[in-house]
Amino acid sequence: MRSSTSTGYSLAALALSSLVVAASNGTNDYPPTYPLSTDPGFASEFVVALQNSLTGGADIGPVLGAVKNIKPGDMDSYHEEFYRLANATKAQAEDPQNSYDPVNVRDTWFSASQYYRRADVYIHRNWSDPLIQTVWNEQTAAFDKAIAALPIPGQRLQIPSPEGNFTVEAIWYSASRNPHAKLPTMIVGNGFDAAQEDSYHYYCAAALARGWNCITYEGPGQNTVRRTQGLGFIPEWELVATPVVDYVLLAKKQVVDENRLVLVGNSMGGYFAARAAAFEPRLSAAVLIGGVWDTYEGYISPLPKELLAVYEAGNYTQFDEQILALRDAESEAFSTEAKWGLDYGLWAFKTHSPSEFYSQTKRYRIEDVVHQIDMPVFVGDAEFEGIYIGQAKKVSDALGERATYHLFKGVAGYHCQSGAQQEMQRTIFAWLNRVLKA
Ligand SMILES: *[C@@H]1O[C@H](CO)[C@@H](O)[C@H](O)[C@H]1NC(C)=O
Ligand SMILES: *[C@@H]1O[C@H](CO)[C@@H](O)[C@H](O)[C@H]1NC(C)=O
Ligand SMILES: *[C@@H]1O[C@H](CO)[C@@H](O)[C@H](O)[C@H]1NC(C)=O
Ligand SMILES: *[C@@H]1O[C@H](CO)[C@@H](O)[C@H](O)[C@H]1NC(C)=O
Ligand SMILES: *[C@@H]1O[C@H](CO)[C@@H](O)[C@H](O)[C@H]1NC(C)=O
Image (cartoon, rainbow, N blue to C red; front, top):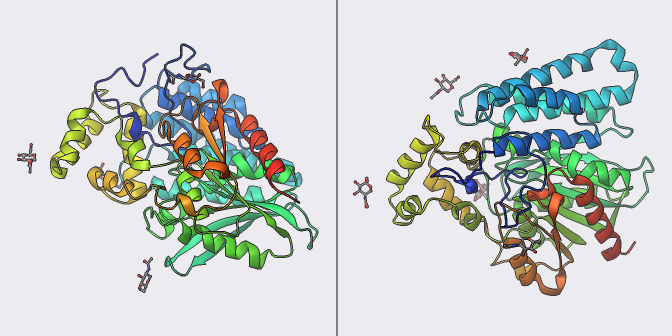
């Protein structure tokens, strides 16, 4: 298996996916699961595609069929295969015979939507590529058909952020038809690349099954807001999360138990949620999957020393030229995950300059606000965390008694517990059950 550390410039840190990327922590048991590709980036992404099957968002055979045809290192083939599968699944969803059964409708559209999201992963090098929009429109339309067929239909929302001058995109899921049921409620934010539609599969389906309401949301830099409002990431995440809390406590007052209101952050969302929690005393608890102390530190650490020196010397023109030349080289100078991380990072932070991207990430750190967080915090860590290595422990130490540190190990030890969603979900809900008083 070609390891991502076998090449001269293996910028694993550029692979910032919420879901991909792992690092051996030096044990002989790495990797702890069977890899589905010789390309480590693809191998991780394939697990992402498969794990949605737990909640109706994939079927295993069709995903393995796509996996079979995807050539290691070939981003175009990855895109093509998932696009083809998404189209085929959409055609099944549109079959009139499907429409009489809401479960058929839901599962088929959830799957089509997920496959469209996978078809989007590797197409962000060229911002003018119209597929960035068309594939996303397909994923959104498919997802809307799926949530309309839930037992209680999901509700897409636009929540203004008056101080931020943008609109938060959200989706609300009710756990009960009872208009006065005061239920515990989870607010879920994704991170660098995942979509709020992914958050349904990772958190909301599990929440609804346990009688919790759930709302997902996206701010600047994240999929919908980046596309429709043209905004890159901002570090002041309270401008995004506080309007969502306002909305939940006002518009959903009758159905939300304000003493059991929990903010969840996935991947880089571990930074966003901690930052927002520092400004949001109305939350009852926060869950970080996992803890993020300083994104810059995570992203810069595996840069080759020579390249890092150019950046640190402030020679940004040279740095940008060198790193982009490596990214576009025919050789395998960059691993697939490194290429993806750079492409996606530039797009999501909305800059064509890699040095500008790295400089921006310096503002995404919680040291200055961590003391303001006044609630119980679940701080997840992963044995094979590949990005924010060692950072969850720092977050937990800074929080002291407020933190519950949990290290996910072995087959659950990948970043964001990729492939071990059940273990992640039951660990979170067991903790919430302990710390929240009904
Ligand atoms: C790797 O993780 C295991 C399990 O958490 C831990 O016991 C071990 O010390 C770690 N090894 C290194 C080199 O960090
Ligand atoms: C998927 O469908 C779109 C719209 O019909 C089409 O343009 C595209 O070529 C299809 N993709 C594949 C891989 O079949
Ligand atoms: C980027 O995509 C646009 C639109 O398809 C195309 O016109 C342009 O040539 C592409 N640029 C590069 C560098 O491939
Ligand atoms: C929002 O817009 C107002 C008026 O244009 C401006 O004063 C303010 O700085 C903007 N806020 C942010 C966070 O951009
Ligand atoms: C930046 O790098 C370029 C290309 O190597 C070099 O010519 C230039 O002198 C460097 N500038 C500084 C300020 O180090």
